[in-house]
Length: 487
Image (cartoon, rainbow, N blue to C red; front, side, top):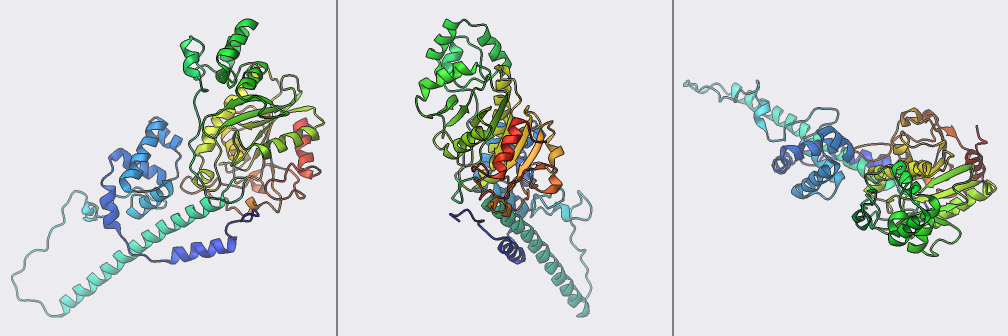
């Protein structure tokens, strides 16, 4: 596993699923029904939608709620049902009968109202008969009938459990194999860093434009109306805000971040530095404001302000391959997953990252960076780019070592950018099942012909992180795409 191999070979995965699907555990629907009855109607609705694969944002839209309210409901559901995470909630929903594959919501097991012949009609006891006992033939017939009913009930219970077990196994396999860039390790749940930059309260107290409510174009107009002395005062008084404001002049942001992260990233200019959480940073190689071409690298898992080595190597390799003509941005501007876990298999961190990526590109445009960037998206970063594609203004969208983009094909991305995909035969991502179940997994392989992306040659790249190695066909192709020479 440390060498980057798949956690489970496909043949083993198939046997695992078959064995689990064939198990026949005893049904415990009376217990699950009792626990389900402890939920409020709204919590029951949220649990059903989780089991049907909807993300927090989609649940919020469906139920007309704030996304934070949905998160609160999910926290209460997990606490009330004594569940650890979203995957267990999915299994519980199937096991309890709240959700069935392809079916409509069921009343919780143990609710016998629906078992009467007609809705609203109570089951009646058999009429009393004051006649001598019938011949032995009738009781024997009744016993056979009862045995048959019991067998049918047991088979229905076992079928429900098999479906729940298959869901659990698929969830487990997806979680196990959809990873980021640093090999296999235990996943740690991450909370995305969102909202305005640190120091915003003091900035607002001066009556300055609200970073959360003002779009990048509005912030660019604000700075354009300031004189040099006032700009310098804001850099000195509010470096953590100015250094992270999308739409502020890049030179001003560089200066602000030289105060908050002095000498931390040699050879690069720091366009953003946010120390919250694991830390986020955006580094620039080249002259962003004067370059004719701009490339933005979006990384996968295990990248943050303190772990940028792999990302900066890719950025410098691409800049050298373009002869220094392209300004390259190493964008570690979102909270990435850590190792293997539900974060790497789900889309929640990618959704937050996509919103930040869209605002970042809007900020470049507002600050006077005219070339539309080419986005190069690695591993989980390709999920971020897939979710941002319909809003982000980009010339090219290049994904490599991708587990999927949460889209069935290139057309479903709804982007005017040219879509490219690369995957080399030694990349372990090729052994990841391209599935999407209960909100886990990222769907179709972008490098598959049926996805419809333009292929990027990558046959001589090595492993999951070798696409930017000097001399590889993939790096040459990436440079040609960034320079606008590839068709």
